[in-house]
Image (cartoon, rainbow, N blue to C red; front, side):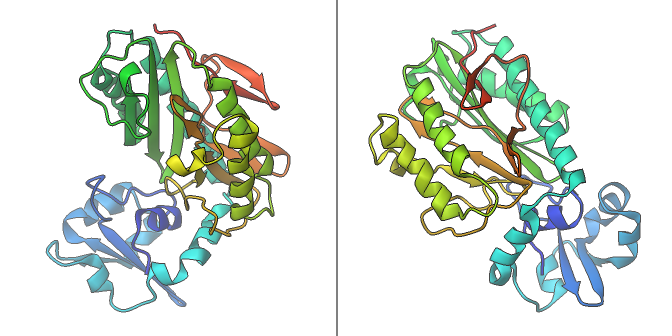
Length: 318
């Protein structure tokens, strides 16, 4: 029984499975040996058949009254939680068409960050920055799953929901945008450079160096977290915020910890996000046999060469 946004969007070729971003999917798929059955809320069925599902899916749709759970209508089956590791492994290595979609999504997400930064000044509010980001994403058909903005006074917060406060001389912009089920994650800095900007790139580089096909996620995590002390941060800095991990059809699929032993594979999307007080690095990348490919990239954003990659630096306002 496929019932989560990440599993359904992956299985149904990037179909939009939501109405409310905060709500559950409006369909479920029962996967049987003799074929699939798509259980859809009746009031959503015509739209999904016309706009989201493949033509051959229409004959497999069962319309469920809006007041009944699509999962209950589908009946008993193996729940996703029982095969979570297998499902993650199945969607980890992206197919060529998925890679193409991801490259386009990453590029356009980065372009939205650039356009928003150009519209901002030190006197802009965090909410006006968030509005520019949300508008830019929506205009490109990208769902704004997460939008975070921290002005100069709120940089200690790792998950800064926007407020009416001004950006000041240095601000952080964070977006997680979804299209075709895939999610692009990126952080950018505007205004002044930070004293730890280069050191946090060193930590990120430690993650990237260890993120190679056939590595285990817990080993990559250990190598990355060790980068904090090696770069002059407190050795326990990693305990103050999650560090990211694989991405794709979930924001993190899963968040990496000392206990996650998933294998890294070729064409595996990752978004590491090492952070310290007033410093953070985050981009969505593709792990390939030849190395790391950054997906959330816009040539208009200033970068520096760092550990073999072009990495973004703080951009001046306007």
